[in-house]
Image (cartoon, rainbow, N blue to C red):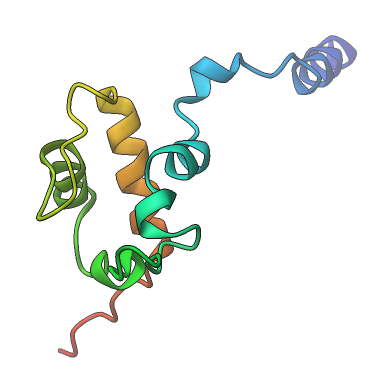
Length: 107
């Protein structure tokens, strides 16, 4: 019985990786294709726009960032209708991950 359980566990470890679509959008590739032209490859601004996304995302939630991506902000165009909701969410998560997490408030 133990050998059957062991074989089942081992065979599961070598199971095929899920299809890429099942993993969700690739935010790094999306950023490179849709955002880096204006915001720079490192998200710290480009020659055209000096907006540092790393700094501006600090303290903002993924919801706030998703809203800015979907609806646009200042000179940035809206991406709602151009990107799927999952892609917008993936970009918001990616941009948020680039920013340092704010220190917790002292109690």
